Image (cartoon, rainbow, N blue to C red):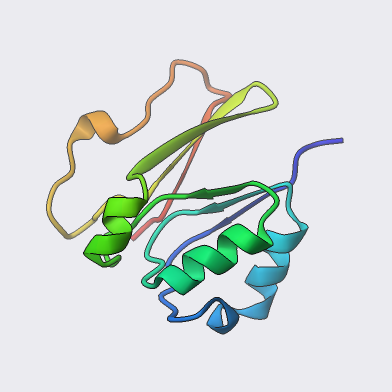
Length: 116
């Protein structure tokens, strides 16, 4: 059976309970859940981690310093032999080092990121 992955970003909420119910259900019902940043508050991080079977979280450009310091900028996971990268590029903000963007020679590998 294939692995079910939920990918969300830009929740911009103060509490996990404020995140749209459909997103919370998708996180709960997935094998792996990825949050690609702009979480905004620690309560959302805690709720996401509690609700998810396998949480992956990166920080975004709107996240406060304390979240940026506690969450990675990028994550790479291997799912069924396919590498998946999560990132929240700061489009329109300060430039980020190009080496932080994940590139792979394999067309099977994918990236999850927030688009402008």
